[in-house]
Length: 446
Image (spheres, helix red, strand yellow):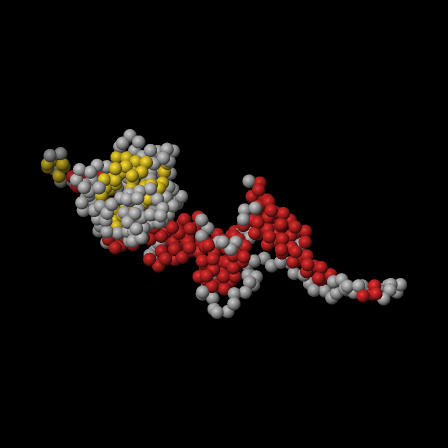
């Protein structure tokens, strides 16, 4: 047996020790590189997107902030500053964030020029800047109450302040390749996009891609081209808009955006799952009778639309317009869907899903025969019909039910309850009125 240093050669132990050493070294290297990779994901508020203008106006500007952490961050009295490219120019404060403003975990905060200069999602903070918030080239930074620089972006070839390298400003907006991804290199972190997609504090919180499996959305120069990066960003922006539409119960817009995402990327499981969940949720609510009046007609219209039954969908949307003619979204979709229906007239037939009113059987009128002692002129008394009386009661019940829907849609719950109670006096078996009344009373108790 021979020893080379401390390695024993001749009995195979040196090979085992070498393999063990290689395993330990490779594990250490993997942990080191992984920690460096995840160090690129920021633990502070970042400038996530901004625009220096649009085809509409050079003053159509906004700056979007994003909180990539799992905790709420207080941004009270933080300042957003801009520095032009002119030599000797210093930082200029464009906006001061009010006291008590906070960005929730994975949330956004939007700053924009005031109307009519700015056109887009409502900003959390507007600044009246007649000459504009930004320029075609320059630098932006956010500093906290103590003056510490939180994040900085330089854009344009002549920018004087930036992180490592400035990014070229050749799109409608500049956005981070992934939310929360920050390598302290503006050129690597940002990409010019052809579609503006600002988010405000009401937008749905978005977790940064570092919380997803490695490689799911994280940008990589080896696997993604610039075009595919833009496509990925556009898909993410559309998906966020779709989720916001769903939350605001604008389901037609939501469905169309989800379909568009699937057309762009057939492997997008999130969009495909949502397209399946929307009709499932509507059917559950209809079965549980959670939807009343406008909500019921709207939910049924969406189901019909998904099934390509455009005529029935248009009928239901027309019913909503009879209740609330000012409903802009419903009117727009009624016009779109009506255009898909053949030239025949859209009749207000009762859809199959809607509970049918209690039918009233027709009866032969019963004439009251005059008694022998009655005079001739008394025998000419009007004919009394049980079916006509029942018909009047049915019509009165429907009238009160529809009045209740109008009051409910306008927010007058108490008046709606009164109308539905009157409906049940005329037709105690009116199931829709019963369901609507139970839901309205439940709302008043809250």
